[in-house]
Structures are given as structure tokens and as C-alpha cells.
Image (tube, rainbow, N blue to C red; front, side, top):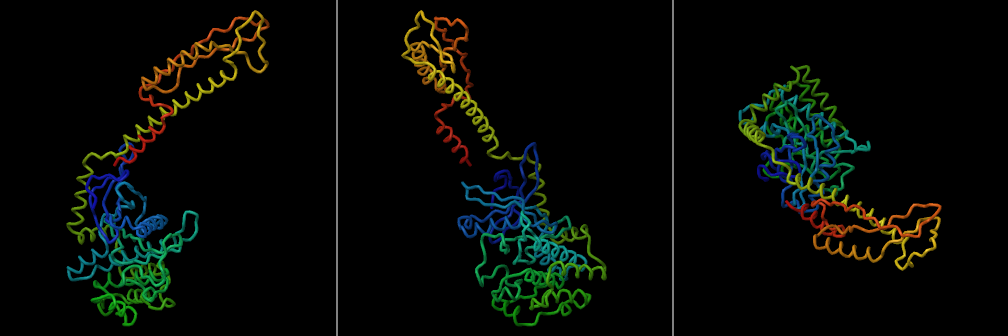
Length: 469
């Protein structure tokens, strides 16, 4: 678990809200410019898995695939982040304040009665819509993802206090865009919700998710587990060989059309099973319209608050308290500003150095240090460039003095070069050499006094800043 107040990149941890076999989930807030804030959830990979390349690839694949699913009934994946120096890998998700359908069903079972029909059907229809959107998802280029969730269960249906149900956790989803693929015969997901073809080692298809959602529907309406046994082998035997109980056996009050719809989703034979999640949602919605309709979002929110109890209230209270405190600035914000200033200073110094180097090169090409002294005869310059006649000894002496002074002061290795300006062309050239003209010295701010040729020192400083936790 991350500590309250920790900052990962630009996300500040507020409090833990859940955990699983692969990651922990924390409420957090985005820290943006101009006091911008937004609540999100951080799904942080467990430390002992973050060093396993296989699990890292699965975690990254989950984020890449889930980010392509656009639906109001699927938990949105917003970002993927890493803190290399701490070995932390995390996903940034839409924050759903509420409870999983599993938690709601367990709380309802403690009261000794199933969930109200209008609420149960509304949650199931929304979950089916989210699953249909996942099956229809496309990549950024528009190619079908051919996504199969493979882990549809009450644990992965989140119901928020906004009255919306959302499908979550695409950790074992199969998709064309995944880098990691399931080996032949390898079962993904929870055994009690796997389709018969998955238990036989056959590839999962969208219809396999429909079967899993059929199990969820049966349990939500019946108020108890469908395939339950002491060990996984006994569960598999029930799913493959034993008759699947009808909802009428546990809920005689249910309308026949609802019982038949759930039974159609639970057909072992894919050829006779409901083929799509859209078909399941449509049939449940029509059945609800004939028997009182679906519960609205306000009614669902009321049930969530009633069943989630103190746990949800504690999370809301902690988040509220934390939001009232000043936001913790991202740890690298000030360092990034200082880095930008240093880069700008270095760039300016490099431009200055380049300019003086070009001027010096031009002077060296035009001036010969061993040129004879001017005579009474006028010197004739080539047509391409004027004749420059510096005083070599003065230039060398001044350059040496300046170099020593700047070396001692730690100033940039840009010396105040001496050069002779070319004489103006005239019809009557003079025999007198031009007087050397000193350009004004360049004032280099203290923040820019980094040796221009010492870029390795700048790089070392940046490396140290970058690797500072």
C-alpha cells in the first residue's frame, strides 16, 4: 500500500480503496497547473510482481487494451505511469465511488432476501451494455480489437453512487492488440464464471462472456451462488455435466420471460446460446418494461449507499478531509523549472560562442600573422574580401591574459577576441593599417557561468536531478 500523501508523477495518493491479486487501488487526485485537480483511481501493481516481466507485460497490455474501450458502462482507463527508481508501475483509472456487485450481493444476502427486481435488472442491463461496447471496441486506427473480457463476474462489475454500473478489470482480456497471448489450454478468469468451452480449453469468444454474464444474472436475481462446491474440480463437474438449476426453483415469483432470458444466456451449446451481450441487454430491458421497468440512477444510488454501509462512508470522509488540505506539489516541479532556466542559459551561451567562433575563423582566414609591415605602396586587396591587418602580438597577449583571468574566475571560455575591422573601400586606399577595435565585453549572468566545453558537467547535474526521488 502507498502512504497517504505520496506523489507518483503528478498524482497524489489520498487513501486505499481496494486490493486484488495483482494490484492495490487508491483514490488519488491529479495535480495540474493553476491548482487544477481531478479525482482518479490509481491501480498500482504489487511490488513482488513488478519485477516479473510476464506480469508487467500483462499489466501494460491491460491498460493499452482497456484504454480503447469507450463506454459509459466501462471503467475508463486514463493513463499508464511508472516510477523506475522505486519499481512502481500503475494505471490511472476513472474513480468509481461505490461497491462491487459482489459486495452488494453479499450485503443483501446477510439481510436474507434478494435484491429488488427493478434494481437488479437495471444493474444487469447496464453491465451488458458495457460488455457489448467492449466487444465492439476498435483500435486508434479503427481496426476491430476482437476483445473478449474472459473474467466477467460480480467482482468486476462496479456500481457507483452515481447510479451507474461499470464493467472493470481487463487484466486477462483477450484482444488482437495484446502483446501477451494465452497459451493453448490455459484458463483465464474465475472457474465458477467460465463458459464450458473455456473449461474444455477452447478459445474464448464474445459468447463466452455472455455465458459468464448469464451466471452473474442468475446469482443477482436468485440471491445466491449458482456453481458452488468445495473445490474447483467439483465446480467444473457441475458446470459441464450437471443440470443447470432454473431460476424458478429459487425465485418462483420471477416473470417467465426473465427466467427464459437468463436460461438462454446459460446454454452450454454456443449454437443455441444468446450470441451477443446486446441481445441479452435488449431482452432483459424488454422484460423489465413489462414488469415495472428499470430502476433509475437515484434509486440505484440509494441502494448502493444502503448496502455499502460504513466502508463507503469512511472512504468518502477520508477523501473529503484530504481534499481540504493543501495539495502536495509534484516533487519535480521546481527542479523542472530550474532545469529549463539552465537549458536556456546554456543555449544562449552556445549561440554566443558560435558567433565569436565564426568571427574568429573569418579573421584567421583573412589575416596572415607573418604579413610584412605596410610600405609606402598601397596594398591591393583581393576583390572577394578586404585586407585585414591586425597587430598579432597585441591579440596574442590580450587573449592569453583574458584566458587566464576567465579560467581563474570560472567564466565561460568565450574570450573577448580582438579583431581589426576591415577598412572601407575607397578609390585611394591608405597605407596606414586600421586601428584594432575592441568589441564591448559580453556580460554573462552568474547563472550562466557554466563552462561551454564542460557539457558533461551539465549532463551530470541533470542526471542527478532526474534520479532524485
